[in-house]
Length: 407
Ligand SMILES: Cc1ncc(COP(=O)(O)O)c(C=O)c1O
Image (cartoon, rainbow, N blue to C red; front, side, top):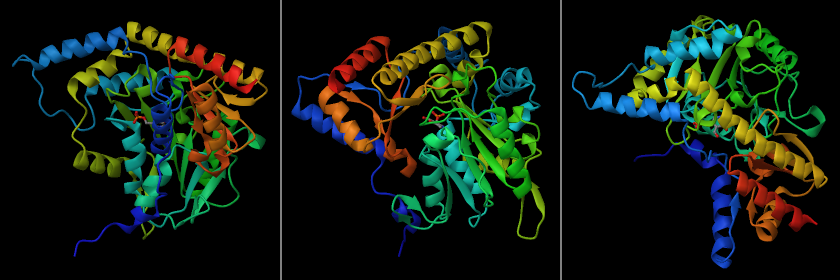
């Protein structure tokens, strides 16, 4: 008799965005004359930069010609893209990352979700709360947690991100083996300082742990004192894996390209105490289960690093950050305490009441969709996330409606 992976039955039944979609479609069905503005899901709205489109067209033409046609490419990504990433995203910031330590993929969601496969099932996890749900759910699926009790999985060391710590958790006193960190953060928009990241690197070294550092939103950092990469911290090459994506940097959410950095110096141990480089394990996993990102997409991603691509992607992130500033200013003006929005495309608003209640209020009175903080974890309660990914007209319109609704 075929049996299921029963860990899946531990997953909390409803998925946040499905819940939101259900409430919005119920509202729209009941009020077909009202227009709803969606500032909920963190998907980009602006088209791909012209430099990426030109590269995509040129690469597509190459695929039409026998002389330049490409079949399977290297699973880890084409050298032209790995070298561009190493040079522009790392060497330019003083980080020593070699092109062959960079694994090109079709998204950070997959990478953040798949990476746990190379670790033992009985390790201790430290995961922030609130959090991008993929980190927790993939570990639940793999059997690294107990049951969900009152919104938290047994066996996980939760790192509370609260108003008291500015939504940046300090290192815990208890030990952990695998630590998930995400800065600039989704959903809180908080960023970690050099000192805060250095404390995490020291903690990982002390505990022989590994940090999984998700910097999907690094291109939104404008404060020059904030590190863009964990590898800007001394010693991080020995204890950290980093995830980056072209999704929010260059509008690739529907185009799909990202990468994971696994330095050859990051080690983990087997049951007999023998050390193993994680680079070899991830290379094995990646080449066994993944067949590479499409050549035209990698060409489009490489165009992000050209002079034109750099200025166009900067203009794109500037545009969303201007939206973010408008949202933060308006919500602060309405008396709310806000985090994020200055080095991140998310504004985390302390609404000091039930987050689904506030969600319903905005939907019913302003026809604006936000994301209830409770969907990101227990510490998300009392907050909502507003995303800056939208047109200027929609953001301005939404803010006017919110102001009118909350008067
Ligand atoms: C924190 C975080 N990591 C990773 C991702 C996934 O990015 P990708 O589009 O590359 O799968 C997202 C997307 O919203 C995210 O918010």
